[in-house]
Image 1 (cartoon, rainbow, N blue to C red):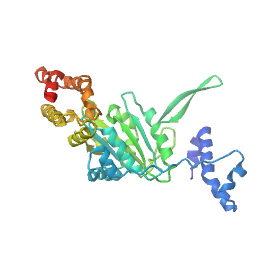
Image 2: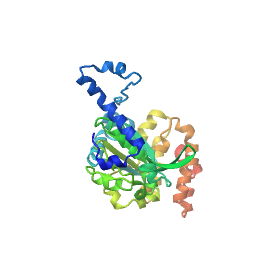
Image 3: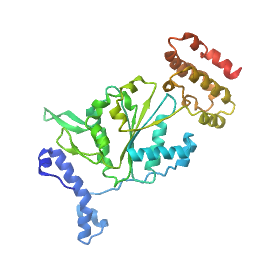
Image 4: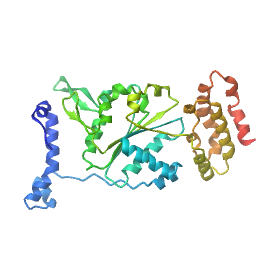
Length: 335
């Protein structure tokens, strides 16, 4: 661990104290060993100081298990993992109900499984800012005086933790990544996402680089028109993985959890609806129906989730919408 004179002069007293503390924790066991003392004598030398190793090894999560839980083929899942590891950041995108966030979490479990890495999830929204994600000035009062201090955002905090994981993969999932103003939120990170081996100065004066063990998975809903705001500069920095409605998965799940439900008729109906929806990004997904006892819940699901979604899409074609009302759908499903 080293620091230049210029960087030292830019540190606040709090940052300097934190850096010294981290260096002490990292190096003190080596001092013990150089004096011929074992690590077991650490507490007797330091009195009140105790060190705990909280880096737990994550449970293994194989591609085979992922296939059983997600319905996507093991080979396809392994391809996604390769794409993420090659590019270092990837985005799952597709229509509503395709399980994008669920799949992102399972892929993260697969990557981190068997290591001391970590997984974290944040969700972007229209008011999410650079200060929330990277860093920003935050007000604080001391002795009745107002001052401002540079506080790291969620991504900087995540990277700091990743640096303590001895190179183990750490995955940050950004749900609904296209809901925020990405150019403003990411700031200079746009450069580092492409040039992972370089560092840049932040507004605080510190230099920053993304640790090599940090991986990013985003999710995008293609029915959300804000996806059009994702420019090509950002697209070039991510591997994009499209998810389609997984009808075979729905067939298997219904056979296991709702064997009395007419799965074939429901799948036929979903295909009919998606045939009427000309834009693939708006197709109806299957996660709406992955419920136990679907027979007793289908009416509520259809009237409170499916109908409002279709009403918005077919707002200028009321004739089509009439055939997808629950009264008609019930006849199609149950005769």
